[in-house]
Image 1: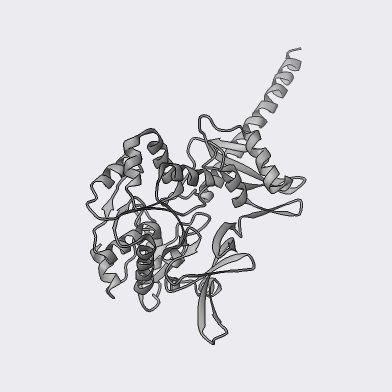
Image 2: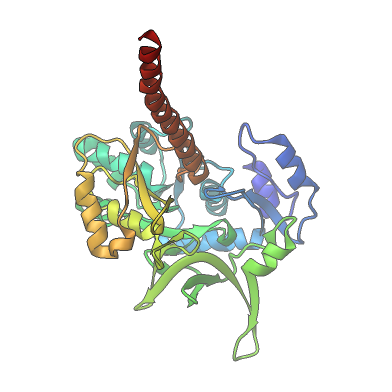
Length: 396
């Protein structure tokens, strides 16, 4: 916190590093020249590829923190249960520095009982916490079976949940329990959440260009370290009709503005083409996650000899889950035949990144190894009768 406070006031920039991170990668980042006004360098989560190092100014971080407190009703104490080397966790420290209220940390693997116990020790006027959907779902599971836990969860003035789409079923459960859920949308490049419940906070502006969500405002990052080409592609400058220069961040997310409210429908790069039809993997996940036991669903593309590509699902094993055929039929009805998944693979636990997002790279590698194992097993099964046949003929 001392290093962060110093950086926010113009001192030495800070690079938060997770335990076990590749030291060579850290050295590579440290060797890069920093843009002027850099206060923090944050590595993105890298959920679908190689993490990027993002340079953030003190002005951007403070602007984000002030906008959050204004949107939530005022400064308060933050309960930190997310990794502080990622923007989702570190922004809670920035907000704490802005409010002058020390944060409370929940260390170790996520445990809903441990989190709520820590919350009871927060002697502050207003209580806030920021979570990812999988954490929030586990809290709701506990609260629905334990009234004291439900009361503790309701005492939060706001529970920010972001990092992934939040299913309608999860939102309905929170509403029925009286939990002050706030859906947060943002990323490292915007200093954290900048759209709450579909509405911009602070001076954030949203527009849709070519189906892509683009964001502007004082919370934007300075750019990517060591990658001027990516910076120029992702952060674009335009002059408006009044002659003012505006800087926009291209999120890569698909979305819509309906009645002034933003709805993010998925990633533009998470699209497969099946029989000439574009299919959004994120939309498939959204439909599946509305069913009991399918809240952790991941949709992936798999090769198909006839259609080119077809979707498949990966889900964590749950008792009492709705049958796959029912989920499959719902996807077909809502999104069309091309979006209908060919099969589902169950896993005891889906690999996740430190911030709670599914590690798509690790999931795809696990599936590759699983398929290779199946091929070896089938080959052995085919070869065994052939050997027995040969042995029988030799004996005769």
